[in-house]
Amino acid sequence: MSAVTSAPDHHDLPSGPDDGRALDGSPRWRDRKRYAWLLGLIVPLLPFISWGLVELTGLGAFWFYGPVLIFGVFPLLDLLVGLDASNPPDSVIKWLEQDRYYRWCTYLFLPLQYAGLVFACWMWSHGGLSVFESIGLALTVAMVAGVAINTAHELGHKRASSERWLSRVALAQTGYGHFFIEHNRGHHVRVATPEDPASARMGESFYAFWPRTVSGSLRSAWELERVRLARMGRRPWTIRNDALSAWAMTVALYAVLALVFGPVVLPYLLIQAVVGFSLLEVVNYLEHYGLRRSRREDGRYERTAPEHSWNSNNVASNVLLYHLQRHSDHHANPLRRYQALRHYDEAPQLPTGYAGMILAAVFPPVWRRVMDHRVVEHYQGDLSLANISPRAEARVLARYGTAATAAAMPAAGGEGLAGSPR
Image (tube, rainbow, N blue to C red; front, side):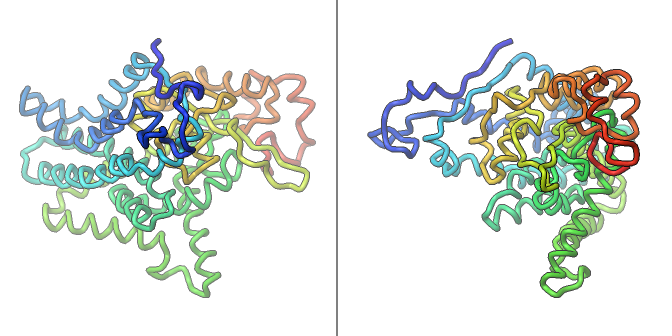
């Protein structure tokens, strides 16, 4: 397998001021993936690409091109292109984050995203598509919507109010505007704990995780907003509630699309929304599977560390998802822009990129075979340190339990291995 290198070693860099530039003012380090980030803009173009392939071949099956690209082509590209574990040197991080080119790679996603959505609505209403073809187009649009949530994730962590607003716009297509609230103020606080609805437990299938995380994240976002508004002396039923205003954007969007193109588009909008946010949740599922932060003596959880996120250095998926797979650095530095995220040697590594791991996650026996032993190895056999699903605890311990795990188990009636009351 090939390896891609993006940065020379520190001693190969020319000397200069600590701003990422050489003495003559030119950059002394170059991101060899700089223009590869533009490939991420292929995703919002998928509805148009599908149409072009259908027109070229006459085959309606190409309306399903989006899922084929994401779940067929990208897993193969991850294997063929290989890994990139290199990091930008510390001296260029500030300069790299200030380069506005990288911001435009994310900003441009949004107009293309909504152009594709409008085009899809026109095809559903006036394109003469069969139900089969319309469903294929809806699934292709769902791939755009799912990756758009990741674009919203990148923008929503930034300080600029304009970028946070763009994040909400990107989320409107899937009706998942509350993600902006729960992820930043909930998940990042509770990550890798049993209390976090977005952290999957060992032995928990994706199909058990999905309803828990969808409902739990929604309740968490509402509660976070209720508490915030209560501190301001306000009730939650107000337009100042960020959850309500985000959902209102979706209602307004869908209403306009239904008025312009007819109510025939509504079932397909629902399909793309559910599949789109499910794409987010399957990524959540694999990012912290089985990992748990330990409690300190004062009862609080330890600080989030690199070992609390699964990472991947596969280049293809990293370009597709704006370095989301360097997840440990994202949790350590949530404001850091994607192009500057770093690899940690101590972070647990997935066997392939997110695209391939999503395929494994939708087949629970495959997922357990691929991932459960990695959780065991990560904790050196002591599963008392892992975040285990209470429902699967007996099965997991029967297969992987050790004397060390058994000795660490609390007395009956106390906390389970996952650290949460039974």
